[in-house]
Every structure is written in C-alpha cells, then in structure tokens.
Length: 67
Image (cartoon, rainbow, N blue to C red; front, side):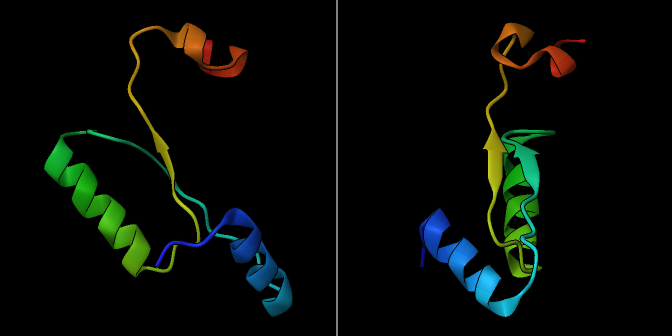
C-alpha cells in the first residue's frame, strides 16, 4: 500500500525514528537488476524510495553533481 509523504513522516515522528530513504538510478546497471535492488530495499524496510531517471546532460542536476 502506498502512503503519502505526510503519512510516512507522521508515523516516523510518532515512533521517534529517522527515515530510511535510499536513492537508486532506474536501469543501473540494467532494468532487471535495478528492479531487484529496489524490491530488496523495500523488503529491508526502506520508508521512502527516491528514484532517479538517467539523463545525458548534467544540467538537469545541481552544481555539485555537475562537477
């Protein structure tokens, strides 16, 4: 079941615990492997997932990532 950010952070605050929010690039190193990694993160207890979409031009990212 999907929850809103507000619901997740409210539950975390009530439990007095920090959020586990891993970041993954979709399709890295390949689609099947990235899907398996994402499923493993969920099974391991990730609270929220941040999924990145590969992009050829770093201008889409901030200055730190561009370097």
